Image 1 (cartoon, rainbow, N blue to C red):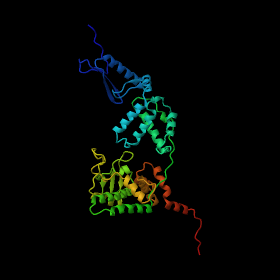
Image 2: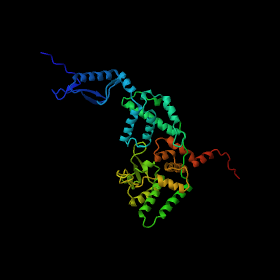
Image 3: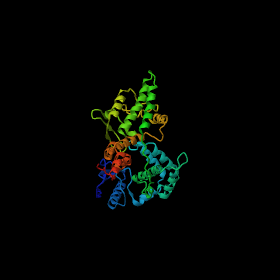
Length: 390
């Protein structure tokens, strides 16, 4: 009588007697199980290969059965044929499927498309660092001018993200983008709203409100809404995307606090309200406005309990700036104004950092030169003349 085959730990039949064989191993605390149908020999070979590579480290043993177990030589062969266009398509899908992680759904896809057009048919591992650097340096804006250092760095980051995506999926083993540095970006001029400019801007906005007829109550509310948006922006100094995510359940009038649900860095933070902001919030509560549906047939992305029913402020804000004769000013400059005014009043930089939500004091220190009060006091220490007694 033939001796029954010895059992191999990690290779099993399920259900017993069905002839369907599986191989199983453990990687990074996860049980990986792969089906081989009736091919028991293939299950044993697969498990033996996985165990050997785990022991020697000369290959990749994935933590999912969907990805193959590859030796170093097999990885090289597989990666050599991957086109950059394949990485572009994969990253684009990842961006579209994760809107919370990739909140900018405009610039990265646009840049990936431009990269794919230039390098999509090239084998990813064959592209050299100098080719990428030279291509970035040749990019132009629609007006024919070369892209800025900041935009150059943005394209570099997206190009690198393609290779990071590929490495995570064992499609490539290199990242040529890491072989050269980003370009240095000079600190921009801090543009803030001075009192005269603010007076002209408010006069324009108030004139729009006063121009409404008695039967235009909704239009009047929408124009008053703009003034409230400005009051809140100048009073709490949060970023535009953070301000327009605020919902009423995050506003606490008793503690004069607002919970910003998601900041630039992902985590929520609490900001405080002064009298101007509280007043603006109370006015917004009285309004009967609802968010506008911008695309027919698609649900409105603005929450029903949003504090700000109007979230598209680019048109009206730039129109108001133009009529108020304020140049080179953008919504984000209101955040600069918030920080600048605190510093100009002699508020400690550490407090300004906390109020603005800056991650480092170095970011806040850009406003230090605006603190004229402390500068004058410092210079007074150098006075050598003493009052002569009479």
